[in-house]
Length: 392
Image (cartoon, rainbow, N blue to C red):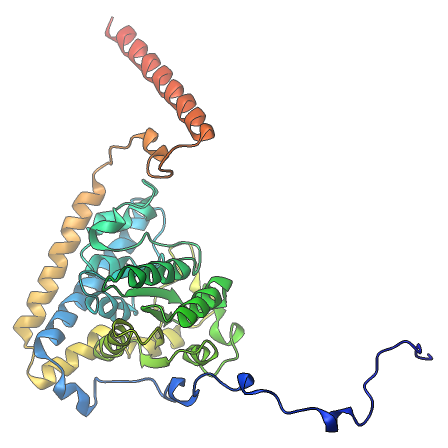
């Protein structure tokens, strides 16, 4: 087909006359320092473990043991009908515990739906942490009390919120760092990109912790990303990427601590990828045997975060068998209290569904609230009439 004489075509020699690009095209930062190490950072089983503070090691261990028992108890509550759903973090407890313990009182935690354990270690009442998963209330707790944002069920939507809060705090002069948790599946969402881009441009005091547990429900990481690691994504936004063994509680605490200190100094955000594994199914509604085999799970059980730390502490004399027993007993006592409280029927007020949604209710909400109130009053009057008839 003959080309139109009006087609815009570049003369053959045009490339030779192009000027070199102006200096603005060049990288704004040297990418080399932003790249993660080729292997995940580890402390346990290395010489670095000898320099860890014993008090921190024991606190990490106690919380790991308690966290494992919390996960098994919450999972049992779903089977008893006391929870509608529970996304277990069994196998990922090192990430959850380290994330909570690295925070200062003024800092904020932005969890996903799988991060109830991190919220509990932060100080949240275990029953309040499970209330959303019970279907009883909007969130289950006051986010301001412990500076824990509401558990985010939509993937990655908590990340831009964390950036916004951190940026606003810096503008006000508040010494606040936000720590945002997300799974590997959440890195495939647009909110992940938007949050990291804004955070890097604004140099916001925020740290992103990606708990790479291998699967986004049934989708393995290899079908989500072709990047060398999720930590490598950081360089594209102009922030450092760190890769850490997510089952090594001491390593996760160390890497997160460095990232938090960097953000607090005003040096901007960091993306940390913790390589871990989701031992349990996605939730109690999931059948994990359909997309992974038992041999794979057992391989990861051999790298269990609780046993890894326990063996290290016993070998170094930081922990003895009596300490192991005390930690187990404390965890069991926590589980017993949780069972007792969760087995009590909650006293619910249907009108609370309209509370804590808008500062000033919209006309539509006021109309809906009035309709619900009328229905509840009519139901109560009918019940009282029936009761009076039976009494006669």
